[in-house]
Length: 61
Image 1 (cartoon, rainbow, N blue to C red):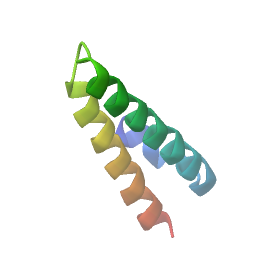
Image 2: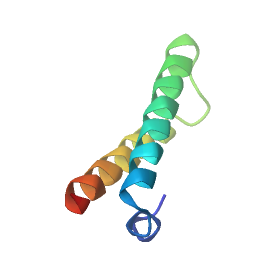
Image 3: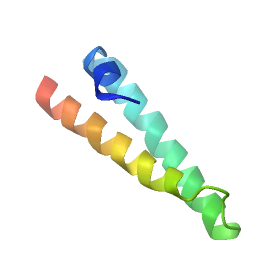
Image 4: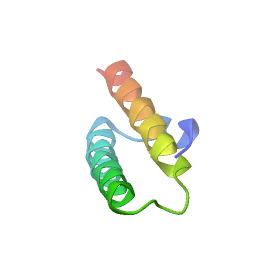
């Protein structure tokens, strides 16, 4: 998710997206712990998206 896309979202949409991204990150970590996932860089990218969303939520308040 790009910064331009994040800026267009409302506060409620940001919170919903953040919750779904955190859930997706948890599933990625779990899958990677069981057997290595094909592209482990997806975990890093998911963490960066979560950080962007949290920053946007803080700025929107």
